[in-house]
Amino acid sequence: MSTDLGVWLGAFMTISLYSVLFKENQFFEAAQSVFVGLAAAHTLVLGYQSIVQSAWQPLVAKGQLALLVPIILGLLLYTRFTKTHGWLSRVPMAFLVGSAAGVSVKAVLTADLQKQIVSSMTLKWSNPNDFVFLLFLLSTLSYFLFLRAKGAPGAVQAGVSVIGTWAMMTAFGAALGFTVMGRLSLLIGRLQFLFGSWIPLIK
Image (cartoon, one colour):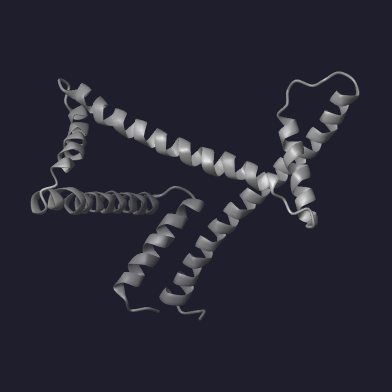
């Protein structure tokens, strides 16, 4: 077995966290609290370093007075902890929400709408996969057409929407499988640590 104290500590934390699969116990709660506390402390240290490197040092050393604006807005966020001046925290929150919405809307429209439309319109018809892609695309869009015509057109749309349903189920299943594979890879990594570094049963 390993003689490294850090390896023993990591193994103890790993086993304590996985012990919740049996039932909740004090070891799991203690390990969970330790990880949450470490994550909070790590975030706090990174935030402090970011403030010093990105705001305070350029302001003092280089005289970039424009940085006073984000510094003041950042300090106003902490006024929410006071009853009398808590309303001041709404000002920086409005800037944060507005700027994030503006940036994300442009990115979403570009990535999820514009590029998808361009990719759908520039298919290489020599590739059979493009026909399958176009069939799944049109059938999935047909699934969300809730107003159907009467007679034959409505029946055709209903049949096409069934294909769209199977296409979406296939996509959801693939996404779930990818998520499960990611979790299994984390589990395999922990098992390799336990039986490779802690108890050297495998190489």
